[in-house]
Amino acid sequence: MSSSLSHFDANGASRMVDVSAKPPTLRVAKASSRVRMRPETLRLIQDRQVAKGDVFEVARLAGIMAAKRTADLIPLCHPLALEAIEIGFACHDDTCLEIVAEARITGKTGVEMEALVAVSAAALTVYDMCKAVDRGMVIERIRLEEKAGGASGHFQRRG
Image (cartoon, rainbow, N blue to C red):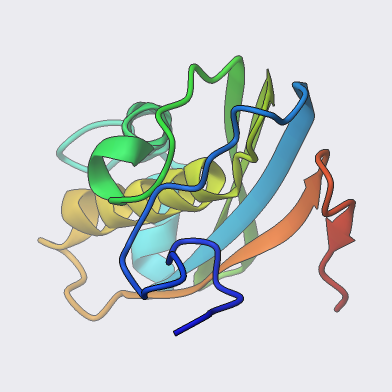
């Protein structure tokens, strides 16, 4: 049973991809997610008036911590010593908080999963911190925006 999926061997068994022969290169990945909420909830976050604390800073820390633990959460990810992870927030309208993470490493494998885990954990933290005032929040559009480095080359999402 041959497969083009790299996480399975010729017999269909799961495996971690062997990257031992790859040269280290600069790897960068950017991911995003969105949290939709009521306008009054977003105002509370922006004004830093949520009872549990500063949502931006707690979510940023959660995203950083989660990115560093990606291999513990995603079974076939390589454990990586990230060199940088940055998390930012933007409000696109009065109901949408966008979270963006950029991960960087000089290594043998990419950091897409680290960036994706970071925005996921940050979005879940926003939900957790604000659920007492808005249980209708929706986490949406978790996606890779860009990646660079390695043999597969550069990817940038359009639109």
